[in-house]
Structures are given as C-alpha cells and as structure tokens.
Length: 176
Image (cartoon, rainbow, N blue to C red; front, side, top):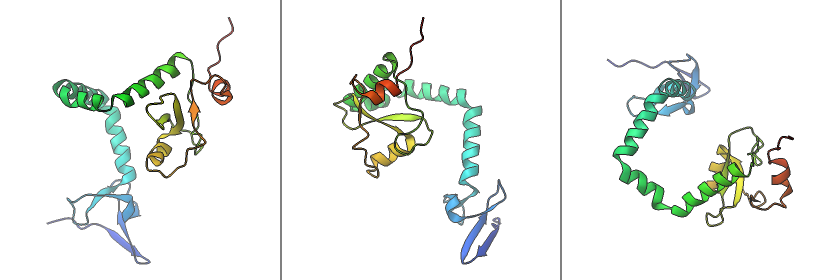
C-alpha cells in the first residue's frame, strides 16, 4: 500500500509537504521524479541541494578517485572531448596562463550583475583568445542563451593601455 502524501489546497493552489523540512510548498519547489504517483520528489529542491552538498563534502575523495579511474579506463572518450575543439582548449589555456603569469586578478564582483560570485571568462571568439568578458556563472549561462548583451563589456587582456584592467585588476607588487 502506497503512502498518501500530505497536501493543502489554498486559493486553488496545491501545496505539498516536504519530507525533510516539514514545510508546505508549491509544486515548483519540488523536482520531478517518475517514481512517485505525483511525479514529484518527497523532498523540496532546497533540501535536496543541502543533502547533495553534504554528500559531496563527505565523499570528496571517493568521487575524485572514481573520476581518476574513469579517465584511466575511458581514455578514448576523454581525449575525444579534449581534442574535438582544439582552438577552444588553446584559448582557455592561453587566458589562464596569461592571467597567472602577468599577475592579473579576477574582479571580485560580476561586471554585469554586480553580484559576488566566482568570476569566469567568456570568449566571444576562440580564435581571438585575448578578448574576453568577465562574468559570473549565472551571467555566463545567460550569455550563452543570448539573453544578455555583452557588446560593451569586452576586454583585451593583452592591451597595456586598458586602464580598467591594468590599474584596477592588476595585483600590486610589494615594495622591497
């Protein structure tokens, strides 16, 4: 006999009970899962995220070991991904090395949404490796979906006259 899920109906909206936090939430707060009658997981997305983070923190070494073994046993698949677009790989490595060896630091805030996130680089054209856009992970996803215009956010990281980059984002050298 299957369990009956607790629900509340208010103003023609169905609220489901989360099995972890014991709060009633709307359907959009739950992930879809075909295993259940309602096609919804018993715990909400927030609780699932917390559980997932906790699992990854406690099993970090196990996951790394699994990934290492996978790369060893499936070299052909991994190498195919690496060398499918060699110009992309070359552009990424070039930017990483240029930033590393020329003491350029990433901005702390995203210049698009001004939120404090881990800042990434977006290449507009991989053949021009030095022209990038600093952006956070959220904005990077929106850029790839063509939801954000970045025409005025481009930076040439090799241009020494670029005051924004070389004065604002350059690491200060200690006076000796």
